[in-house]
Amino acid sequence: MKTSFANIMKFTAICAMVTSIGLTSTFGSASAAPAAKPLPVKANAIQTIEFKTDDKFEDLKFLKKAIGDKRIVMLGESSHGAAEFNKSKARMVQFLHKEMGFNVLAFESGLGDASGTYAGISKLTAEETLRKSIYPVWHAKEMVPLYDYIKQQSTTKQPLILTGFDMQPNGAFGRFMETWFAPIDKAFAEEAKTLENKLTDIYFNIDWDQKDWDKDYAYVLDGYTKIQKFIAAHEAELQKDFPNDKTILPIMKRVISDRIYMIQNVLKAQVAYNNLTVENYVVSTSLRENVAYLRDEMMANTLTWLVDHVYKDQKVIVWGHNYHLRKNNSVMASPVQLHLYEGGSVPNMGELMSSRLKQQSYTIGLFMYGGATGANNDGSAMPVNAEMGPNSLETILKGAGKPYAFFDLTSADNKEWKNSMHTGLYWGMLEEPFVPSEQYDGILFIEKTTPSAYLPKK
Image (cartoon, rainbow, N blue to C red; front, side):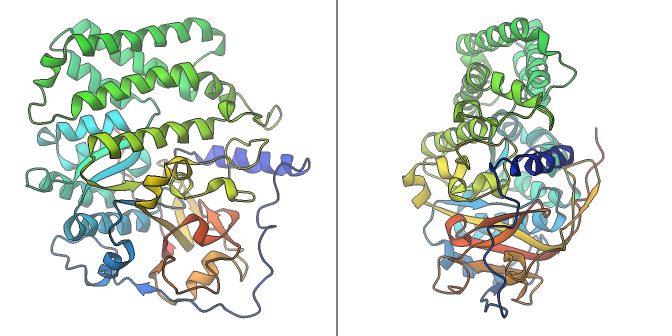
């Protein structure tokens, strides 16, 4: 979930404002009454979260029974920027790939960035692959061993294929288009890069003036329509750059069609949202105006397309924020929502997936009890909220007495708490009330996290 510390603070101020008009409750107010005594917990202890090349995974074998024959494993995280989250998820990815045949890793990052970078992985170092393929929130030193592994496996009979499912524009995809198109038409390649940069500026309100909307809207819509035609006209030449990858053309066609759809159906709402402040905040009255819903709807559609068409015979790991991956956001009484909706809680990506794919999925949420996380990639340490009550999810999970513990919510265990309302921390800061078993199939608990060790910016 691409969220800055400033946006979280803006959201907190907005919540305080709208509480007075009854559109959202104060965080934690939906919690059950404090427990009179600690609730019993049963967990699988995890011995290490460190990534090792010779790992025997003895402490993760239980996942084979928990996950069973599910085809999709969702790996969430309550906050980006937690080193221990990155380490534990990287190790779980390695286990799922080596021991259970999950051969596709889809990040909450751009489809074009991730897939385009992976297609050229033989020419890149592991760190270069990391930087080019996924959002900066994961450009951390503790992620490099995973990318070493992805690169090593890329030449084997069972590669761990890297892709993404997000729709947000960014400069990385612009640079990919420039490199890909240049041998055919250098001037057009430069125009494609400039176009992506302009769309990124509009989408994220980077040195962009809203009075230019009409002109710039026409420019970006016309530009991506031209790219769509360019790719169709030069398929054979473009495919030559990736002779052994038959997925690259359909994926890039999808990226461009998604850009056109986003410009026509999402961009105006995003621009309006970017200009909201605490003073002029307007609650969305339609899901078609709610940018959180619109983004998750597109991500759900893209992930479905990848699973059903591009990797239809593969098992897929999905890496993202808890918010996007949890199963039923709309049933939560007062979740954190960066764009408030008059109708209540908006459906998220996990909820918008088809019933068929939901039945094939095992969703894991990650939570921490204490420590700190990073404010995305700016290096700021954000302490975990220490004011948790006895009925908070984190307090209950800490009862396992283990620094790393896994709770399988699909088993008969933990019935004393998994089906009742508790609060859990979003980004380690804000309380969200929810029923654990309604949102997750499993929970990985880390007692203490530290901020990610971010790579130097380039």
